[in-house]
Image 1 (cartoon, helix red, strand yellow):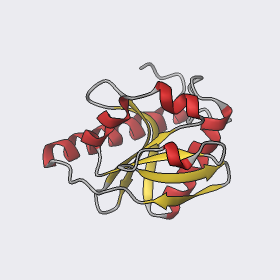
Image 2 (cartoon, one colour):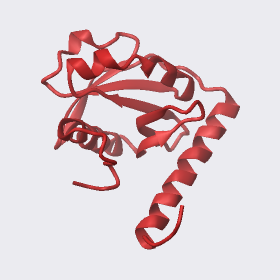
Image 3 (cartoon, rainbow, N blue to C red):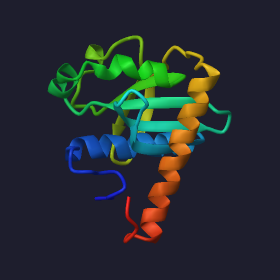
Image 4 (tube, rainbow, N blue to C red):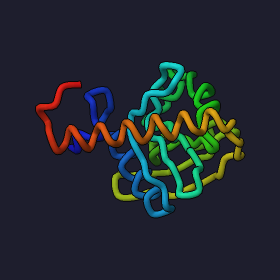
Length: 151
């Protein structure tokens, strides 16, 4: 298991969905981070940034129960241009909200089943997300190079 992806809260199913989703996003030209804290205190499962500045969030749902227990996903729309759910074939696609995009994933890869409606982030929000993303990525790289670093 890749420690950069897991912090102990994710199930093996969720980690597999995230891995496949990130592979797809990478192939589409996005750089991604997992478990990125947002300005409202929420934590996004996957945040991607495209070369054109597009910010997307992918909310990973590993089961019907996982989806039903978590209603905070609507709050993520304020932090991205594109919002997706990522599921495995064990979760019925028809229960996922129509207003979000849908990704079907396993540990090896993923496919977009439905594109979301694009929302334009406010410039200040885009800047804040880019800074949050860049700082988190740099901090994670630093900790890999120097694991004894505090903070």
